[in-house]
Length: 130
Length: 296
Image (cartoon, each protein chain N blue to C red):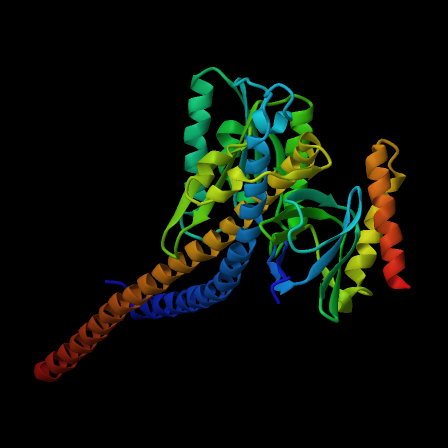
């Protein structure tokens, strides 16, 4: 059991998850990655996507449209803008997020980066729904 | 002496007022618990965010290349003040305390000959400030449809602030709100949002291990900062909202408790008065009857 890391998922509203796990899969802004014990200290952003907390044969799947990740001393802190567990994947809130992203895309002034991020949100939500 | 009927009506009316204040007190107490939980639950997020930003700040060597939100534009001429209040009254000195704190700051800024801009959130601050500072108010945000202030509302406020900052409309941004200490004590706060003044809020917390650690940044430090700083401001505004809400309920609870007690005292006094009057009337009638009988 020494191969575990501490995982903390925090949203502005609450501490959504705090437990030990073997690895965590995240969708970083520059690519997907999985963090194991003794990973180098890291700060990065998340784009829309799944967060999978794995422990042995168990894995919990969450979804978020973005956030910040800090890994230090085998402690992983994930700060999320919003947070959904697998039972909420079909909820209206997620549909609203998708609509929001679609609305933003109709605005011509936004930067390429925002276009990419919003497209990512739509793609990922479509993925969830299927 | 007032008539019996008048006193009876008066007692009935004070009693019904007392019922209302008592009910309001209980509602506030129930809401307070929730608001307090919300405020406490939000703390880990803002603390963590602060610690990451502090970390990044320490890794920045060249102050000129740093994002402006972090270091400001090195001027101190134009002030933007964001005053958070509530939309409802009957909560004791809650709104007045915030406004008093804000007014003191406004006077200082104006005396020094600097420019002032105000954003008011909640209609009560607007009511109190518009008489004297109407010309300085640039934006009014209502909380009318917000039972519990959402993150989205904080986002809305932040967007307005950032929009003004981008247009170079101010140098320093200060946020006014009430910090919840306990049910009977709420402290009006003036917190500087831009440029970021993290150190101050951080002295209280122990994050010794953070500055020493080496991080891998993905993407670059500056890019991360540029993305994180607006988020940090939103979080701070959101936290302030939550603190404010807890304070409002706490303040209302105390105010309504006092009102209920005062109504009780008043009812007691009026009842004594009523009984005296009643006795006086009876005595008077008796005297009239006796003297009438005697004269026969």
